Structures are given as C-alpha cells and as structure tokens.
Length: 124
Image (cartoon, rainbow, N blue to C red):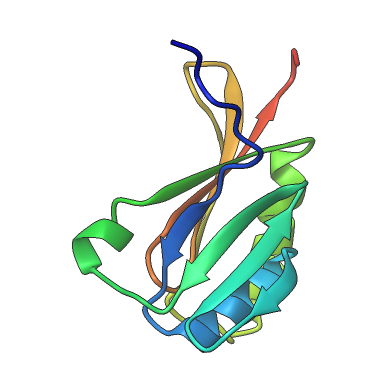
C-alpha cells in the first residue's frame, strides 16, 4: 500500500486569551498570515502554527514548540526585551542553557503557558 503524499503539517496551539496570544506571537517575531474570530495562522521560518481560541490548562502547560535558531543568546535578548515591556506579565524567559543532546536552548513561556524552545546547534 502506498502512503498518499502530504503538502503541509500544522499544529493547533491553545490560547488562554486569544487576542493576547496573537499579539504576543507577533511581538516575538511571528508573522500573522490571517485571522478569523477564533483562529489565526502565524508563521516563523516558513513554519506555520494555528493559534486557536481554546484553552485546557493541562494541555497548554504540557504543550511545546521547538524552533531551531542561529543564536539562542539572540533570542534570549529579544524575548527578555519583550518581557521587560510589561505587556505580557505571565510570560517567562530563561537564559540559554547547554543541553546534553548538544543544543543550547533559550526557554520562553508564552502568556498561556506554552513552552517555546529556541535551540541553537553549533555543529549543524
């Protein structure tokens, strides 16, 4: 049996406050491609996510997005500056940390509790 081809894969990301999350992802650097009442598509590095007006605490606090970047330190500074604006009081940022699997990762929690990994690989 032959597997049919696929053209794209996107994930649905929960939001606690839809408007706040849409603004947060744009401020962090994602491009807003389109939005409707309860769904928006944001894009970074050619990858798109659906932000949805739906929240389940256990799901949101266990949801992660992994972004491979050129500079984890650069993303840390960028996210830290956004945090310092005070626009997103529930946002958190952790300094880059070298992980055992070889990446240096800056961790950012969005206003809903989603954990974003900004991972830099020095040998890739």
